[in-house]
Length: 321
Ligand code: ATP
Ligand code: MG
Image (cartoon, rainbow, N blue to C red; front, side, top):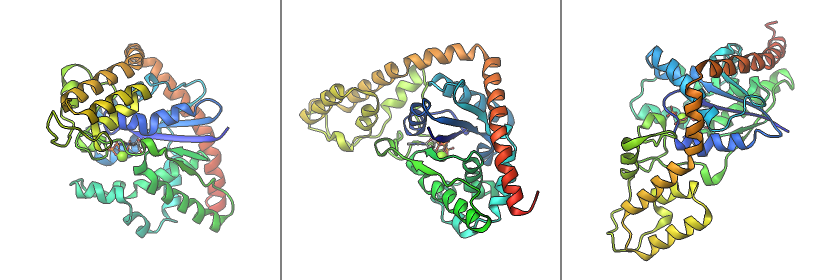
């Protein structure tokens, strides 16, 4: 087994891009590996949400991840802010991180381009992420493609550290599944909590159906053949449908005589069916907030043990202990 680490920000409601890009691959690694999965609420703070909202979102992410199949008996599941050791490691790693390395990060440049304020936290985000990964001696990190560069930054920092202080940190590897590397959002760009283009995992009722109907397609008329391989609706359908179902819808695209409204309805039906069992589990969890809190507390205690050991080695190595 390997040490696996995975995190998701509590920056909004979890969406199917998070599910297929990160959560499902992470969940499938639970058996036979040593997994540390966490809710990145320090990272979410870079957007300075209202305190009550940040707390609520953090709880919601915990519930959603558990509902999707996280097994807290085997997986260490915790809130980032419950293991404050990560902040000390962040500082130490910061001192080894060239500013230019962070200036080149696409995710930062992207968020600026979208009008987010450039606070230092947002800029230093990849260093905190490196600390998250290195603190737990992680070997494998399942992520979407958007995190590929950040993983390279982490490796770079770990290698710098080891070159200077000896073989202290485990140099991790990203695990990116090509078929789910970038799940498109309603507008065809990467689905992101902060882009307002998401389909929530647990959306309900009319509003969520309306979202499916808003997915951007080309304007090929109803009667004409359509290309499934360039269509966002089909790309999302593929994630949830069986190979037979995919072949059948593909056929209808190619044959023409099917409007995009029909494909969207098929996708919506598939989505409702796919997440139904998890939706059920989620309802049960929502009735037991104390159980969710206990899981996170227990996870924090287990995570802290590893964190303290790594931090002790690091403090010793750099001359702080
Ligand atoms: P934000 O907009 O606040 O950055 P996000 O939607 O990008 O939120 P994160 O919490 O940053 O979500 O990412 C959590 C995990 O989900 C990461 O591993 C990331 O790579 C993955 N992920 C996020 N969006 C997608 C997507 N559209 N396709 C595939 N993976 C994704
Ligand atoms: Mg993101």
